[in-house]
Length: 441
Ligand code: AMP
Ligand code: GLY
Image: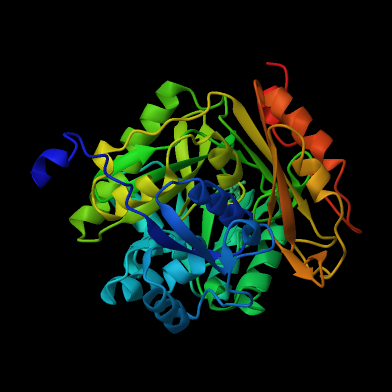
């Protein structure tokens, strides 16, 4: 009988699906690299991707991440089973809401939930309400009032544009004159546009920083391995803020006990507060923290993977990224168990001359293949562009060289050795990524 010929344990073929990744940075290259490894991915597309992503996915060159109608149409026409949204702008603009309404699965929080990053005052109020430790802060919509407050307050303060500013909207001001200058730039000259219609002036905290990223699906939280970013443009953490000049994982500053405290006192109450307010949060919740003498305190939340933290984290992730993302979207995250490479990973970002200010594009880049050929090294593209077979710079953060090592010191050595092979005119990178983990106690 036909029935008898069916094997007792039929091997279920993996559910193969097409995935569309939104974004074009180093973070997206690292996500694409990990997604492409998944046996469940039958085809990977990137909107718009970059030349590094193009080695793994079909890139829609020139596509705009804010072209929601175009993304929806493409996803429908190509039977995309999951859209993965990398950057904050489309999340804050409601891309996930739109796709979900159209019956397309998307990874990332809704517009309402993404306010946690897009509106720093929304985040502050939620933290206050949930007694989440963070810097004391005041908010101002009037530049005169902000200036008055600074003059009366004196001392070091931190000035933040409340809206999205590509990681550049924060000034740590040690002198009153620097604080006033920041107000002039953000509120009067509107350097960041409407993102600067309101500013937060907060107390300056001290201590080492860390980035803790978690997969969140409403009340379910999976905390990833710890990481540390390096935001200022120059060695020793001086100079203007950037989107991030390098990162590594894990960071010895975050012990298991600290990680538990962060989950219990920060992530859980935030997620509880959102659920209580009827806000569904599904995606990545990224807490930028300062480890102060009085415990971890929140500097900011992001509603997406960090760039460059994602590069070392993806180097270390051994589990299937697509499965985890689907678990988030389908509300099955409580069953997720992820495996991480016990080794350390460290990523160094190379930037264009002038970044985070204005910079030139179109400068030829050489040596990526040689760097990539080194064992346990991966070069992730960021702002690059291929024209007539030539690789050119096309952004501020051009690429990130990421290496694994048995120790952070070894990962660092390997990353810098690989960086030596890469050249472009005006290339800048920090030479001290990981220094806080390596300096003698
Ligand atoms: P944010 O984008 O809010 O994380 O701020 C960017 C960077 O500014 C952080 O990574 C810190 O280095 C610094 N920063 C932000 N808030 C504070 C604060 N309250 N005290 C000291 N440094 C801060
Ligand atoms: N690395 C900082 C960020 O992604 O915002």
